Length: 530
Image (cartoon, rainbow, N blue to C red; front, side, top):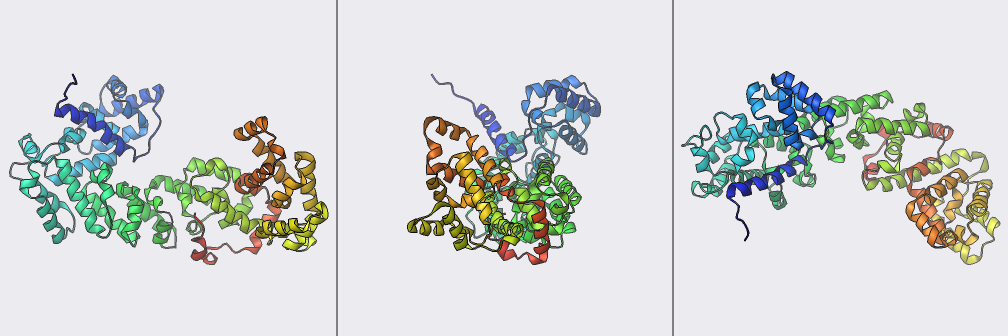
């Protein structure tokens, strides 16, 4: 026979699920090691005047606390002392698992509901409080005064609350309806009505399944929506970026103030190009600025590629280090736009968004041809037909093959290549890799790459696990698929694409291309997914 659970037991079973949803909106750190646990317990006990064993036991019984760093735990404890005594914090030490922004949200929500004095126990057991009905809360000691109108009290705490919104909420949440509803349902209704007031033309039904949206202070939500509507012209932009509705409003305002100080371009242009910049920690943003300054890259150059602000500082340093192995530091500071694009495409393992492959095609298509032209000025300019004649002199093509190759080389007609380069590439493909004439002609663009790029591309391709498996079971290397895969690998691997560049050519290129912000047209940049 199935055992029935009490309502309180069911509530306790649901609480971790709700907590999990809210926590996933925040950065998740790896579990602290035993040494870090001891250090955190020692620092907390010294600050709160208690035994370290108390916190060691707490971290064993509440493992979620170990996902914080010792610095974060101590920071939350210091902030809590502005409202509560140290003894109270030690008694309800499990609250340390929450970040300070979540604790602030809970305090503000309880104050807006009419709780005269918000105790730390109320904040700690906030999910339980929100699951109670208004009559139950009025019977609890020091919660809501018996004659208090909760809905009306919430509405009076909203800054610049319009009368039409108040009338609609009071009509939907009449006293007869709210008597039997849990407080979380009442709060959810008010929040959804408030969002509908800000975005009247949007379908917000999907937000009803997002607890992290509902569990927000209305005062903070007002501050957040006021900020977002000033940056975005339409509510659709806000809804598209769901994280904006649950982000830290104080940090978002700090980011706006910081970027306003740095860049001369309107912040609206930057945030519309990369909305997630609002969710970046402002301290991390300052660290990224310092790294860019070391490479003589000013904030005015960042506006064309604001995704650079989303990078972790350690990751950014690593990318600059790898980039400096391809281009000299002197050139990095001169080719501003190319620097950002190449930086984003430096390594396959750093791919963050699906637009990177498209960006690689756009960048290499725009930069590779001028580099080839600079490297081969003495050879003269070749169009598609001249390249075709060179290939014909090497492979003796039929009429049908010439027409097929002319179509395949159409994308490369802007480039210039010498006869010696094409013959050298053909000899490498035939003698060292073992490709047949038919295989080469199925992907003739391979003849337009340097031998260095072809050799590295083939080495990279043959080291892939699935290619090793194919080579062991079939005669894959003699098929046209092998040459086509090699061409695809070179075109889509940033490391291989960068091998077509050299410092001398890039230095000449930097002198001939104007990459100042005034020369970069936003209409052209919109075509590329930065």
